[in-house]
Image (cartoon, rainbow, N blue to C red; front, side, top):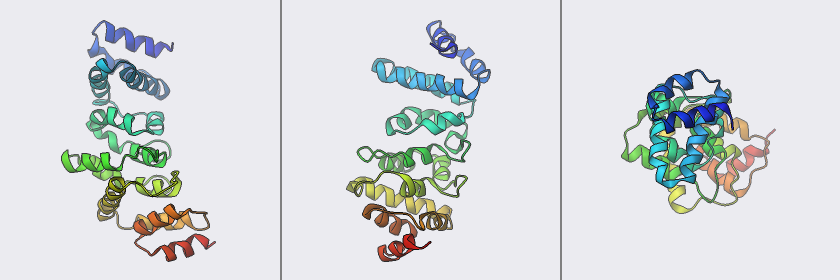
Length: 222
């Protein structure tokens, strides 16, 4: 077991929670990510400790920026749910990895077609005031792509999202484009010359506000 995990476990077992912040600050980003992942994995293994582990993660990230490798590994809706209270603190939703991705970029790019996160993210925006989450939705990465654009460009999309997720995705597109109306042009540039399936063409048309025929013509352009 990694030393940083042993230290974390020791602090928790001895109820030395006030030391967690200082310990975390002494670690490199890889070790910080190991600690955060350990909290999440422990919560999944022992559901009775879920809330406690979630509170520990929140305690740590309230005064520390999420490390880049952590942002790069947050790929599931379940992980986002666990870390949501922590990411609400200290502008965690706006933190970026080395490629300029925030947690929404990573989550949407690696979307699981059987368990999409759009409805969950939209619900957070509707029922819990969090301006940073709204801003994160329109935040471009190093390639100029927003989280929704990353989903359209890179995620595995074997079929159109189920109705409630599709409706939420359209709502997220609208929220994004009210903040950053020019962002969609970068997706158009990325899609040129790519091979898109029917679902990707449909979603691209909705995002770019063009017809499916126009998108089909666009992707054939080189």
